[in-house]
Image (cartoon, rainbow, N blue to C red; front, top):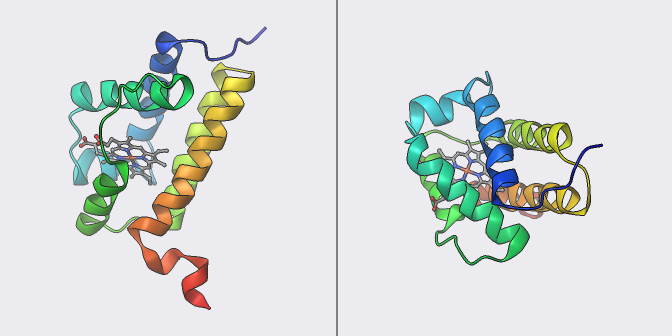
Length: 131
Ligand code: HEM
C-alpha cells in the first residue's frame, strides 16, 4: 500500500523526483536549465526546507518565493501554460509516490501557491484585471 508523506526523507524523495522531471521537460525545463541556470546543490535543499515547513511547520525556510519568480519572469516571461505544466508535474509526482492527508495537503498548497504566483509575476494574468 502507498504511504503518506511522513518526514523530510519523504519530502526529499518527492522533490528530487519532481525536479528530475522538470529538468527534462519540454515546456518548462529551459527556464531552470538555460534562463536561471539553477545551482541544484543549493536549490534542492531549499526546496526540502520550503515543503517541510509547509507540511510540518519546521520554520526552516527563510526566503521570498514570490520575489524569486518575479525576477525570473523579468528575464523570461512566465505564462499560465508554464504554471499549468509545473502543477501537472508536481501533482503527478505526489500521486505516483504517496497517498494520504499530507499528500492531499501538499497538492492543495502547490495549487494555491502556483495560482497566486502566476497572478503575482504577471498582474495581467489576474482575472480581476480584465474587468
Ligand atoms: C512555471 C513555474 C515555475 C518556474 C519556472 C520556477 C522556477 C524557479 C527558479 C528558476 C527558481 C530559482 C532557483 C535558483 O536559482 O535558486 C525558483 C525558486 C523557487 N521556487 Fe519556483 N518556479 C515555478 C513555480 C513554483 C511554484 C508553483 C512554487 C511553490 C509552490 C515554487 C517554489 C519555489 C521556491 C520556494 C523557490 C526558492 C526561493 C528562494 O530560494 O528563496 N516555484 N523557482
